Amino acid sequence: MDVVRGSLFIGGEWAGAAGGAEFTSFDPATGEPVGLFAEAGRTDVDQAVEAASEALFAPGWAGITAAARARLLWRVADLIEEHAGELAELETRDQGQPLGIAQGVSVAGAAEHFRYYAGWCTKIEGTVTPVSFPDTLHYTRREPVGVCALITPWNFPLMIASWKIAPALACGNTVVVKPAEQTPLTTLRLVELIERAGVPAGVVNLLTGGPDVGRALVEHPGVDKVSFTGSTAVGREIVRASAGNLKRVTLELGGKAASVVAADADIDSAVEGCLQGALLNSGQVCAAYSRFYVDRRRADEFTEKLARAAAGLRLGPGIDPDTQLGPLVSDEHLAKVDSYVRRGVAEGAHLVTGGSRENGALERGNFYRPTVFGGVHDDMAIAREEIFGPVLPVLAYDDPDELATRVNDSDYGLAAALWTRDLSTAHHLAARVRAGAVFVNMLPIPDSAAPWGGFKASGWGREMGKYALDVYTEVKGVWMHLG
Ligand code: NAP
View 1 (cartoon, rainbow, N blue to C red):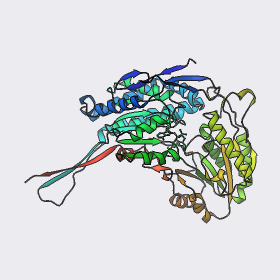
View 2 (view 1 turned 90 degrees about the vertical axis):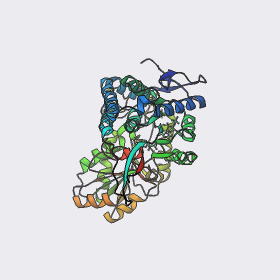
View 3 (view 1 turned 120 degrees about the horizontal axis):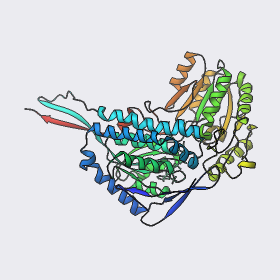
View 4 (view 1 turned 180 degrees about the horizontal axis):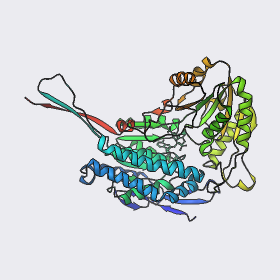
């Protein structure tokens, strides 16, 4: 594939960075360059925010009907589907995920989001409030928050950009999008399709570049809201840096999803579900199952079957249709995953399978063998910290009553899973676990109609469903004396 050249998109114009800087993104399966992108600087950030501010109240955007906004979003969904093959291939080349995941999760999820929020445009309603003043009409309006900085991570670039752009536009906001520097390719293509759909100039702006671009947006007095998906550490920085003009902030952060396997679970289904839930996109998923609490009577059987299944997975470039597990996004990230594995060994966990980089024919890429640990304790780093890679620590439990306490003994609260045939066990644990989503006998894949977000250090606010409308609108009360 040729190296793609990417520009910034500001106020409806494609152009290089004002300072002329560029950066490269690489195919994690081969180490080859895939894209050469403009690297935005302060001037570009100022111009993008100014373009978004001007577009916010321009007749071409603020003056169009909700039905017209809906048609624009619907058209974007159609264009994503018309370019599904190309988008999936770009995502696989840039991010590494197997082509089937890129098609079935990333591209399909992106189109679905635009279509879902197209439906909401004409249903964002206010209320008439029965205030106690005589002869007074009070009603509420839901108005756009304003200029939204949308900052996304590298694990599902196209889909997460769509999680933010679609509801932001449905609510009438204007946006500046900043994708992760490792994976800007599909966001660039998405913005081209948004332009092609007829979204007016300045409504969607794109800034590619490194963390300084994100920082400049978060500090910018012209930005009204930040919607961020990424690590908890950066989420904390954003909270501090956004305080200047008290921006509205939505944070979708890290996770350490527990997966509980009850004594009555169908072990083979649980093994398959836990494996897929842990290794989707090589474990680079915020809600990936990443610590397994198994009834002690079934723990050895579970660990042995899980390790056998993990060791049998085919690693390879995502572009190869036979690949089951793609590379990690970068060499730097692989080194981080490996350091956790070394820590697990040093802390006394039993390494059952994996535990090293995959070499041989795959040595040019960032391939890490799926790794299963047995005999893990709650206080080990591999059981507590977000690794964001193909590492599966198994812990045993004796008493179901201890489970909620152990599962909740975590800084994070994004997701949890439970494998059981007992409805009572399922509902009791679902109620006691402090997490934004609990999956019973299924994989942790979100849906545009259902809320997504975390408790505790996993974030602030919810995306998706009607919940996203709350975070992309301000409520205004209008009081009118009728006497
Ligand atoms: P990250 O390092 O926090 O970066 C995320 C984005 O923020 C990137 O675009 C990054 O730019 C930018 N950034 C970095 N420092 C910044 C700063 N100080 N101010 C503003 N922006 C800044 O996260 P990542 O490594 O890309 O992604 C992995 C993390 O995302 C994991 O923790 C994962 O759990 C989380 N995640 C959460 C969800 C969810 O729904 N809760 C979904 C997916 C991923 P550069 O790339 O240019 O550095």
